[in-house]
Amino acid sequence: MPLSDMVGRDELPEMGDERARKIEDQLYSLQRQQLERNHPLPMPSTEFWQEVNNLLNHIETSLNEIVRGEGHSSAAIAASRRQSNVRRAMADLARKRLVTLLHHAVTAELRSSVNGDGSRPLAPLDWTRYDPMEREFYDGLGQLLSRFKRNIGWEDMIQGAGEVSDIPILAVGTKQLDDFVEQAGGLTGQGAPPVELEERYEEEYREPEFDEEELIAQIEAFPEMMEQANQPIPETQAVPGTEEISVWDLAPADSHQTIVIDNLVATDHQAPPTEPPQTTPQDEPTEDVPHTELPPEPALSAKAEPTTPNVLTRIRILVSQEDEIMTEAGDELKLTQGDVHMLDSEMATYLVDAGVAEVAAL
Image 1: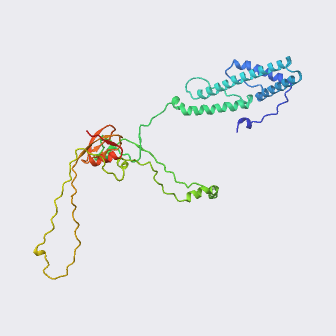
Image 2 (image 1 turned 30 degrees about the vertical axis):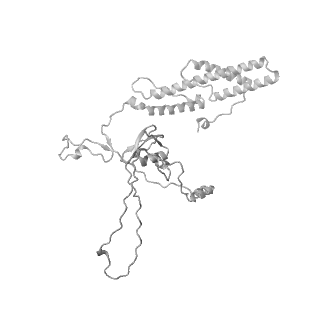
Image 3 (image 1 turned 120 degrees about the horizontal axis):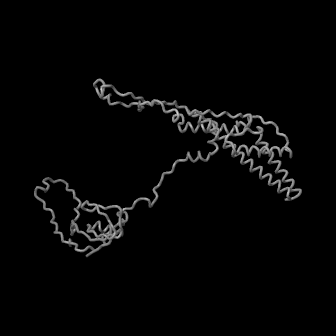
């Protein structure tokens, strides 16, 4: 609770012309005296700032009445000039008094911490002769100064850090070198140096407190969300066009070797006629047993399929490919636009059918 609410304020008398002139004179007098001093002077009354507020309201009311009755006459101009002078004096006095209160608070707070400077402490202010608002401002400065001194380590800088402990603090489970030495006294013969282990504090788990009725109300507030959560998740389908397409995927399903390949070896040789199998006397049946006719064997084709030799085809790459292909010899080949390669006829045909390459015969 602010100090201004704790301190009771007396009812101020009605502001008349005579009292307004008196408060105005006190304002100018206090302003002149405060400008020459760095110490906050006592107020004419504990309600002085409230009196100045009433004074400005009185001047404002008088100015409005003059303007309504006489217009912007000389009396209205004089009242407006008087209002400006009072406002200027009030602002100048407030600025100077706040600076002096800050100076007094800082000096009193820091001087009390210094030892052996031979200076006398500042006399405390008699708050019975000051406005309660100024005391509230002064107490707030004291709290800010205390926080500032604590954050910068003011006491350590003035009093010194004192005796500093050289014992290191290590994690739990840390072993020293002497623990691995069997001889008495360890490595140095004086034993292991003292260390401190960190203390771990484990907090007990506490169940969070919640109201079941409140949770039920939150769930029932959005029933459509519960329906969506209970629906089965549909199976995801692969989006076409997202998978990587290799060179072999571009080739047609039924690729036929329609490219004329140079320097092919003619393999259309006539196969020799096959002779019918000859039977031996041992193969003839010796007993009279019923004979079962076997189905005739299929006649061999007139032309035996020749074995195609490993013929290479010269091709030129039209479209570069990121993936490397494997040749018949087991080597990896990088396809780059403009390159010319000698590949086996089957692979060359696939690449040409896929539009990746073209035949580049010499």
